[in-house]
Image (tube, rainbow, N blue to C red):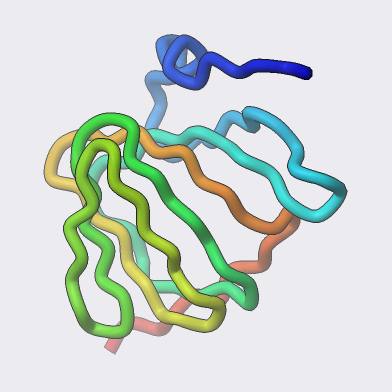
Length: 109
């Protein structure tokens, strides 16, 4: 049974939004680590997305409501929900989502 040292894997992860796959979860899902910094474009997916913050804080605007997610906390973004991550400093997250998840960008108004 494999064990994963996610924080050790993250030590070499310095680039922002360059996901590194930790493991596959059956044939449909995977878990990856990623660093966030700054604002991202509002978007949605056809499947759920689960984010756990390992370091820092991520603010996720979901359907117009802001959610602060701090170290050790998680958020489940439901399928189809328009969401926009933003980060004042730097955050490290473990994300679980469907492989090949398609992103629908939300046009700026």
